[in-house]
Image 1 (cartoon, rainbow, N blue to C red):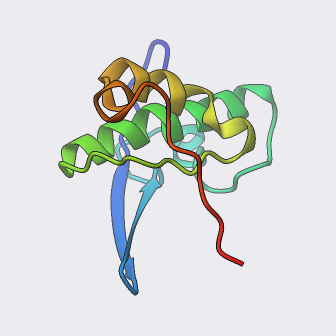
Image 2 (image 1 turned 30 degrees about the vertical axis):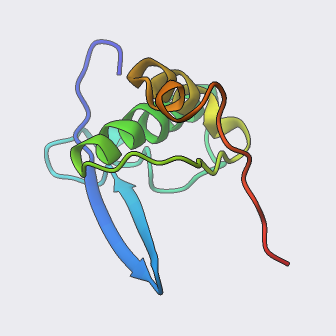
Length: 108
């Protein structure tokens, strides 16, 4: 975040064959307002929304890199995608796999 550092904890859950990575800012090292960033999505004001996008986008890309995961498909959820797109493009993950991100496929 501009002018401050926010700590993010990475949680991992396995659901069948799926490896789900979750991010949490509710840590004692963070200020009370920063602890609430990942508390509830789709709530709050503009600043909170941008903070969430930064944590989910930049933090998400960094978390996956730290776990040595190089996704070939990204699930991008609505407006929370802005910083994920920038961070992953900067990391070069999309350019290694192809010239553009693979489309998400939904099973019915």
